[in-house]
Image (cartoon, rainbow, N blue to C red):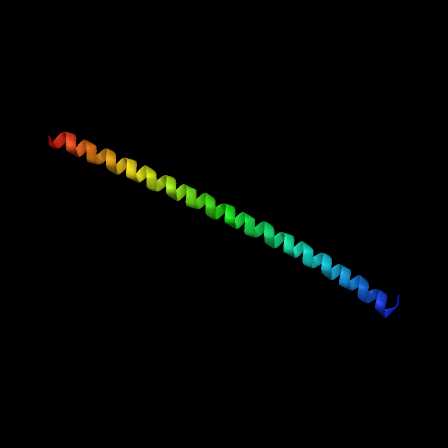
Length: 66
């Protein structure tokens, strides 16, 4: 195998590794983004539940106070 052919083969391997790394990086970013969105959704649900609970408590306090 001559130098040029081995260079081409090593470049192909390098490109393949780079593309694998890129796809793995993209998958990790998407996964992180999904987790972040899920976490954000969960925190919004928790905030909403807290607001409902707080408003419910206020209603109970108003009823008991009157």
